[in-house]
Image (cartoon, rainbow, N blue to C red; front, side, top):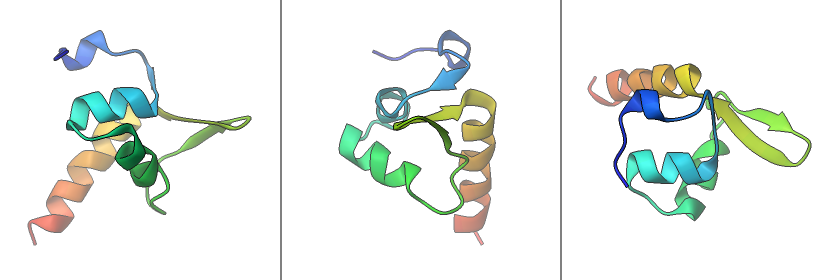
Length: 66
């Protein structure tokens, strides 16, 4: 299901990332393990703040275009 960025909650899960990036949930979890990823751990749960994720994604785009 494609949504507008504003339709997503403030805190994103791996499932949200998979949907946004059109990748598997396993790939989303692998991405969350990247050292520069702005991960938030809540117990054993992995989450990311929406604005931090899109900022990180934008930075990755800039790095990869150099």
